[in-house]
Length: 304
Image 1 (cartoon, rainbow, N blue to C red):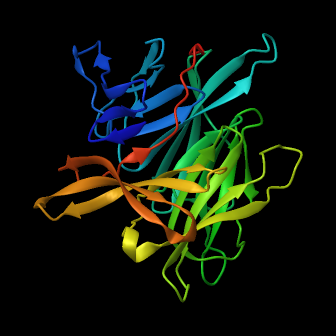
Image 2 (image 1 turned 60 degrees about the vertical axis):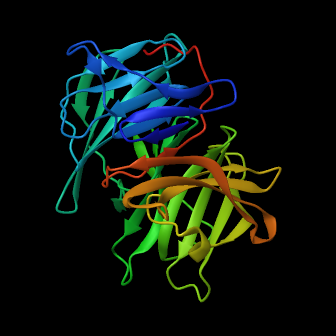
């Protein structure tokens, strides 16, 4: 799926077009500036609006919450196993940032209650970069500012233990200019990285081993691309087919036929730096939010 200009668009063969979400309070289409995917559920927010929603596009079920949404507030969705019912239940993590201070709150959908978390990571989460959910955890890029030159980390949050942990990156001491996260077949992580100190303008795409809480994360490089040809920026999103060794990237660009608007393009990166532009292109006048490309598998999971 692709989030573009307040709407979510399906790019699948079976279902094409925009998916509408009606706000029952105002009887209008809900505009979406941010979307977060977890187990077939979408957490949708609209900046400057005091409502957010957890939505299952497959069943149509929704859970609306009245809570402020702004640039310095970020929401993510994750699952945990309920100890009594042994069913999957869901929580929303709320991050509020001001002057490099970060506060975290948790919302349990089952009990319909918020509470403050008395725990913070020993680094600064880069909430304006991509984040993903996988196997009951959310993953972000983060900065360790205790170093002389702040280094980039990968940090996870476990919705069962409600604790943060560091996850190794391919280069544990790297300084990067472009970073993006993705999920491969709901079992692996993938990172797209462009090192700031690289002599050549290359992006690297790495895929992890299957994520397992009992195993150390390791990485394999599967693709290398020429960044100037792509023109990627900090808001790049991507998907990977590990077997075919190709990646689908989505980013902002300028169309030669119309330089008055930004356009969102799809690029296919193959082996040997092969680059193909996809047949999808959408215009945008919204400058603050980049498009988001993510893999969506329909699910009958209940919002609870």
